[in-house]
Amino acid sequence: MSFDVGQIVYLLSKKDERVFPAQVIEEIKRKTIDEELVSYIIRLPNEDKSEVLIEQVDAEIFTSIKSLEEKMLESASNHIQTLLDKTKKLEKMFESGSPAPQAIQSDSEDVEIDLGDGLKGKLNMNELPV
Figure 1 (cartoon, helix red, strand yellow):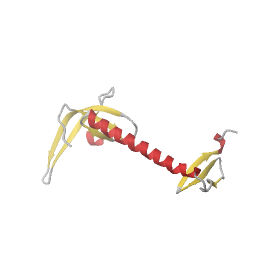
Figure 2: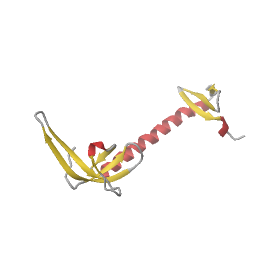
Figure 3: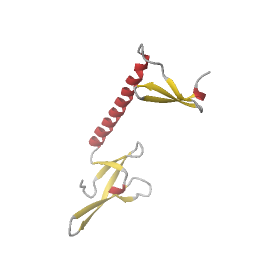
Figure 4: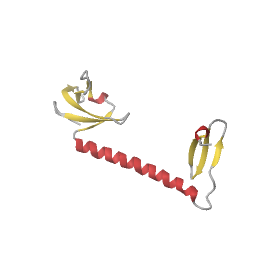
């Protein structure tokens, strides 16, 4: 991906749910016998205005707010669908004829429950209302 010096890019952190802008402040070109390499330095929006190589940032890089928004909406939609799919699988335990969930281990306060269809859950016995 190439950038223009002065361009604003948008970083979607891979570690946590953070989005922030950065500015491309330098383009570095290196030419070797085998190839030409281009790197970019960006300025981060922190108090120190830190400058780092763009490839050292653990984030997805977007050149527009619109493309960032589309990616975030897609990720949120996928996460919601995953939660709903898991819920549908758990719902089957209420169907007549389905075996009741069974405890797999009970040697601590945490109990692992076999919910069927390869699904397992953990339950902390101390958190149950008495």
